[in-house]
Structures are given as C-alpha cells and as structure tokens.
Length: 360
Image (cartoon, rainbow, N blue to C red; front, top):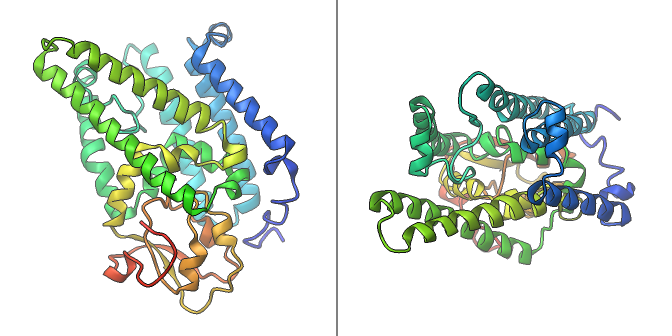
C-alpha cells in the first residue's frame, strides 16, 4: 500500500480533524486566534526577547518553519513515493528555512539589512516603492527590480507559475505542507470560481495602484496638497487589509474549513500576475485521451478548486491561470491520465469550445 500513488487518500473522509466538523472548526479558531494575537498584540515580544530572537516576527518565522517541516514529513509520508513531490517539497522547505528565516535573521546581526530574497513584488507589495529601493544596498535593489519585473515573469512563461507558487514562495510552502491535510476542502463550485476571478485580480490591481501612488509621490516629492496623507493611507490600508487580514488571519486561519490555498487562490497578487503570464506560456497539464474513468480524484484533491476531471473526460490538455503545478492531480490519478509538462500549446489547448464547464 505504501508504494501506491493513492496511499493516504483512503482516510481523508474518516479523520474528523480533516473535515468541517468540530475538530476542523477548533483548528480554525485556534489558527485565527493565533494570527489575531500575532498581528494585533505584542504578547509574543517577551518570549522572542527571552529566546534571543529580537522580536515577535522572528518567533513567528521560527514557528512557521517548524510547522512547515512537520507538514512536510506528513506530506511525504503519504505522497513521498513521487520523485516530483520529494524534490518539490525539499526545495520548498529549504528555501523557506534558509531564505525566508535564517538569512533575514542573520543579516542584521552582521551589520547588514534584513532582506527576504525569496519574495518579489507584488507579493511583497512595497519592494518596488522608491523609498524602499533607495534604502536598500545597490545589489539588493537591482535584485528586487530584475527579479520582480524580468526573472519572475520569464520563468512563468517557460515553466509556469509553479516555479514560484509551489517551489519557492513561503505562503505556498505552508499550504503545500502544513495545509495539505485539508486540500480536498477547496471549493470547486462555479460561485467560488467567480469570486476567485474577481477577488484575486482586484488585489493585483490595488497592488499596482499602491505602487503607482508611491512612484507619483516620489516624482512630486509629496508637495501636492494632501498627497502624502493619501499615499500613507493607501499603504496602511494595503498592509492591514491585505497583508494582515487576507494573507494571515483568513488566508491561513481558514485552512481547516476552506482548504490550504485561500490566500493563494483568492487574494495573492503574485499568483494573479503569474497566472496571467502562465496562460500565454509553455506550461500545461497534458491529458492522455480515452483513459479517464471519472473517479474524480484529480478534482477532489486540487487545492486550487479546478475541475480537472472535466478536462480529462473531454480528452483536452489545458492551461489554467489558477493552477500552481503542485502535481497532485497527476499523482492521485489511478491510470496515469495526467502529466505536467512545458510545451508550446496549440490554440485548442488554451481555450475550451462547446463545453459547459467554466474556464479562464
């Protein structure tokens, strides 16, 4: 049983803590409470100082890594027979531990500036603000600009958004590991898909607006009456509503009842931007014709809410902006119908015709 791709799936609906029962809601209340405490109180400051971690954000980073490593062990125990899964999760954990925690923690102690090399604009929404770039060492400023505006989109064209969302990003790393037990809870309804489209692109638009306001403020030197106040309000609102509430309190706190990609699917501006690029790129999920038995495993375990089965039933290879290339649909397919690949698709692979299933 341990060597079968479906090992670990049989208990999905038998374990109460993995469904929307009392245990699931208890998990949710605990996670939401923790994030409210983290963002809106200083309770963790004293423990952080006692542990030599400086402030609450480093103790949070440490806890983040611990829960992610524990989740990785859980994930690989159930799905580690896949070489793709082993490599993906190993890279994800390594990037988060080294670039998302250790390096930013060590750099200030060595006289440098705290910097997160694994994050880019627009996920790190203020990385391209003029004053942010001005305060960075030259090599960091160049890294931020080139990484955000050139490297990230280029890699999304060649490899799809999976290179970042499922291999590098810290938000995706927690969803890939700690959030994996709840992946089947992601809604596949048309209503959730419509909300996703509206919400995620609205956040991307707001991130672009915030950047435009910051750049305009720099060009005007904030001499326009009221502009400095307006720019400050835009930044503060973005940091509170999107950076705290949507990415933390709700984005992670709702894992046990809405699935692990609440933030990534519905609100992440980086996912939205790379998804748009991915639609024009080489990544797709290839469907072997006339092999699907309609078991539904692929759709059930899609953490991004994509009805993969409908494509398999139609014998249609496809590219979806939402897809993060986690590979679980291919992993849980009992017949090997699905395959992740990088290929310059024909037009028929980029749009669906004559089918009732929604797509974008």
